[in-house]
Image (tube, rainbow, N blue to C red; front, side, top):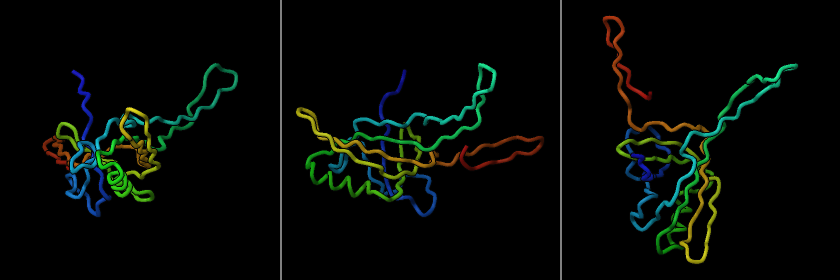
Length: 168
C-alpha cells in the first residue's frame, strides 16, 4: 500500500557541528504545535530535473550528450497559519527569513533527512471560503537530501572486515 501521509517538517539554523538528530530549537511546520501552522502540501521532494546539454550530429538523425547538470532543488511548502493569523504570519517571517541559509529536516517512519536552503519567496493567498495560506519557495543549491543519522556498513574483504560509518 502506498504511504501518502506527508512527512513532518522542521526548520532550524544550520548547526555549527553535524548532528544526528533534529535540534531541540528546530520549529515544526507541520502539526500546528504551539499554534504555529500546518502544512497542506509539499512540492519538490521528488528527484530534481536534470539539465542535459545535447549536440546534434552532422549528417545523422541523432545527437550526442555533451554535458549534464542538476542546478538546484526548489521545495515549495503550502503553509496555513493557525489563528491568530497575523501573529503566526509574523512568526513565519521570523522562522523563514530571507538571506539566511536554513536547514530543513523531513521525518517520516523514523527516517530523518535534511537539506539546506534559503527562502526565495513567500506569497500569501486569500480566497473566500478557504483558509489564508502561504506558498513558501525554498531554493536548495545542493539538491540532494542527506541522512541525519549515520549508517554503518560492515564489508568483508578477504579475511578482513572493514567498517564504514557515514553516509551511503
